[in-house]
Length: 229
Image (cartoon, rainbow, N blue to C red):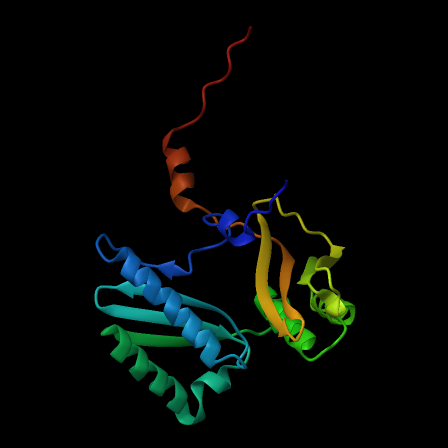
């Protein structure tokens, strides 16, 4: 039975980077769980702020948190009161010097995570799943997406037997490493049970230059010509 690899992890080192940037020998598990709990709490706390992703970076006794959101005003608050309050809470929780950086997302229609959460919210409001999927697809294509696939799974329309349905428009080269594929997942909690929403979004080709590898090949010199047989 065929399975799909996670598009983000599949492209790490090519056109995607790690969302947790730190290293530890002894406290790796502790810091990893700390990152996971921090992300979960921030997503729950700012559920209506359109948070697409949260990146962390650690160095010595410092912790930097980058929050990418479509509505930064909710997180920052009036005159920065909310973000200052959040900084103090995280410092007390982690015993580290915390730096919080809020990054605004200019086009939330091209963020797979935000699209999946939007579809999930519509399903919870009893919007027809086909209408919610079609609306998300049309919006993404209108804002410049090269291709998009939206898949919903569960007891659709209250059916007794769970099933999956999906819409696919445009290109979606999942096996091409240089393809910039964004992926998002969300769950809609309805009266009939949970409905999973998955979104794959193709933004075009993008490859981050690997300068170290280029210099390595350059130092080797020209390749020897093949011998004539």
